[in-house]
Amino acid sequence: MNWQAPIPRRAVLAGIAAAALVPARPDIAAATPGVNGPLAAALRALGIAPEAVRWGEGFTLTAPAIAEDGMAVPVTLRLAEAPAAPVQAIHLFAPANRRALVASFTPGEAAGRTETSLRIRLAKTQTVAAVARRADGSVTGASAEIQVTAGGGCRT
Image 1 (cartoon, one colour):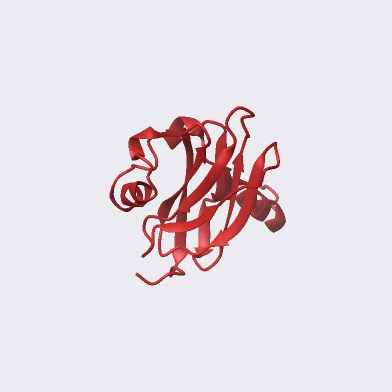
Image 2 (image 1 turned 135 degrees about the vertical axis):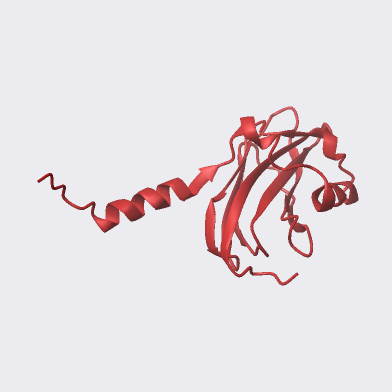
């Protein structure tokens, strides 16, 4: 009889937790957000042409792949600062929520990397996107798909 020892519960949970925090990959980020509908409208309202956004160029959005509850989903935005073109504004979007624009930030004058962590409410499973507008007019973006398993935090 071939018997194997069971895998410890902690090892399984640690593996699930490590796999749940996955940053958006630049090679799929361009296809992920599908800049249309509510996201495109929200970008245009801020004066940003959706087709001008360059996805994944030094910008990452890290979030859990699965959120058990949409009430407080942790999201981290990291942007490598370009010395020639400082960041003027960062905007975070959840297109399936009643209001697509979740938050806007204006970084200070400090040079270096810009990093922001916050918790957001999500109505349902969706692709969360963030864009950063630089002083030279260029716009970079990042996105991540988040599955909400139990009722969302925002009522639509």
